[in-house]
Length: 352
Image (cartoon, rainbow, N blue to C red; front, side, top):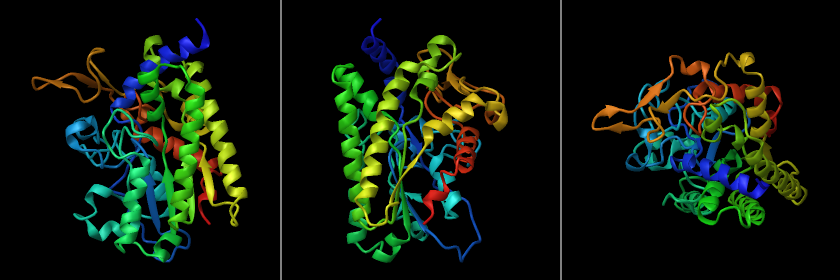
C-alpha cells in the first residue's frame, strides 16, 4: 500500500474522532491561588479546539456535556473533553492564575473576566471544519471586540499570555473532504494561517504567545483501535512531523522579526506526549493507549445513550489511563504531560 493511500485510510479513521470536538483546551473552574503579588502574567487568553475548550461548545452539539465527562473534576459534565481538567487548566495553574472562563459565560460570571478568557471551541481549526463553530480567526475577533468594548485595557494585555491549541481538526476535515490529494500543501496553508493568527494576537497587545505543537496523532485510540491499542501508527505521525517542522521554522522566523526575540513560543506537546506514552509507569499510568471510556460497540462512543440505556463503559480507575476517549487525554494524562513539560523546561519560557 503506498504511503498516501495508507495515510488517507488512517486519517479517515482519525477524522471521525475529531468530529466529537477535537482538542479541548478548556478550563473554567480553575484553581485558587493566594499569590497576590506574583510577577509575570496575570491573564491567560486561550484559542483553539477541544484540547483547550473548557465549556464554550454548546450542550446540544457535544458529548462533552454528557455523562461520564467531568466525573473526576468538577464531578459532573462541564464541557471539558475529559474526565477532568485539560491543558488550559494546567497552563493556568503554572501561571498561578485562575483557569480563564469560557467566552460564553463572560456575562454570567463577570468577576472572572480579570483572569483572562477562553475562546476555544471543541472541533474547530484555523480554517472552518465540519462543526459550524467559530474558527480561530473568529475567536481572535471576539478578543478584539472585547478590547474595543474596553473589557481589557492595553495594560491588561501587556500582562497576558495567549495559549493556542491547533490539534488536528483542520487535517481531519481536509482528509474527509479531499482525501490525501494535496495534503502536504494544505499543511503549509495551515501553518501560514496559524502564523497570521499568532501575529494578530501579538498585535492586539498580548505579550507572550504560546502555540502547541501537534500531538502524535498516530497514537490516538481512534487510530490504534484497529490493532487493539497495541502500538502507535507511524504513518499519521509523518504528517505531524511535517506540521511541527514547518511550525518551528515559522515561529523561529517570527521571533527573529520581533524586538523581544522570545514573544512566540512552541509548547512541545509531541515530545511530552511521547515521553509519557513511552514511560507510562513513571507517571503511574497503566493503560497507555487504551482509552478509559469507550462505546459498547463501534456504533457507540463515550457518552452514548440509546433509549435511556447507556451504551458506553468506563474503566475502574481513570487515573491509571492516559486517554479518556478516542481522542482526548484523561486529567491524569494531561497532568502527566504537564509534569513532563515542566521537567523539559518548556514552561519556564512562558514566563517573561
